[in-house]
Image (cartoon, chains in turn purple, cyan):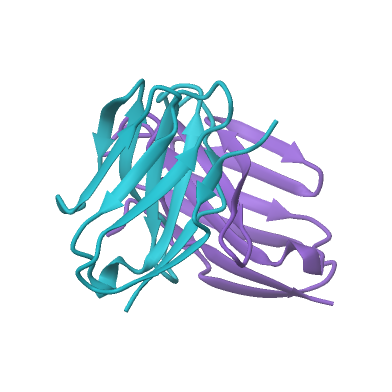
Length: 112
Length: 114
């Protein structure tokens, strides 16, 4: 079993829909990261959180430490949101320091 | 300020050859980490370096090695290339190698082994 599990693996939405991507982890962590990867490979950090909720524009990330679960929400989705969204954790368990342990990623496609 | 840079962008090598990938961190960042991302999977941790010393190593064979230079840039070397080494190699830098510090990723080097 992977230390970081994401669902769904693939998600197709219509423009304007509310989107939720889920992440569960099985180890102790210091922080959870949500990242975005576009075709071609570059990875951009969206959020780094250790508790509660963060919001940036149309993106919202929440984490429940007790349940070892995090969600990434996208409101009013747009075709430019199409990308792979990756959950990663740092610190604790088999991880150490700032090294990241990644989930498999969720491929999001938003159709116009 | 420039972000994390990596070179080359793309590389094609033959089985058995050796390859060197390069990474320059964001100015002021002293920690560099390397990750391997095989197509369709999430990245896997290879190495972390801080102040020229190895601070962590993932589950990769000894064919993989790395080093960090006094200017904090880093090289990843892979010897005796196998087809399975074909992947996107990502470099990330942070101020320090602690989990409270955010990592910033470079664009990656796509290695194809034929």
